[in-house]
Image 1 (tube, rainbow, N blue to C red):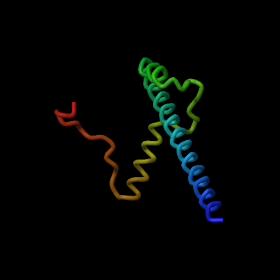
Image 2: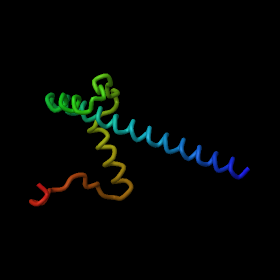
Image 3: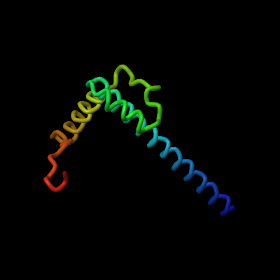
Image 4: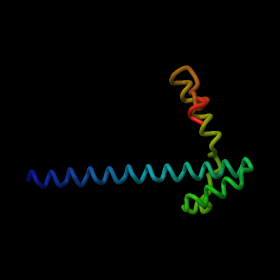
Length: 100
């Protein structure tokens, strides 16, 4: 009985881990698609083409939905952060000379 429970626990933990890995992989792919769409919309066609070639994921087979773009996601995150912490998030920072 104990071995059966251990097997079930291991099997369930493995399924949860695999589901998390699939979510993470889907999130990464969605980010790449959003970035490629943003680059294209902003006129960075060569950069978008380079991203497509380097990823080898066939990103051009996908489109960003009508109500989603990278700028909107950033604005919504800033709003969420402001509501939660009463200040805007610091998204970027200047590099020091040694980091360049």
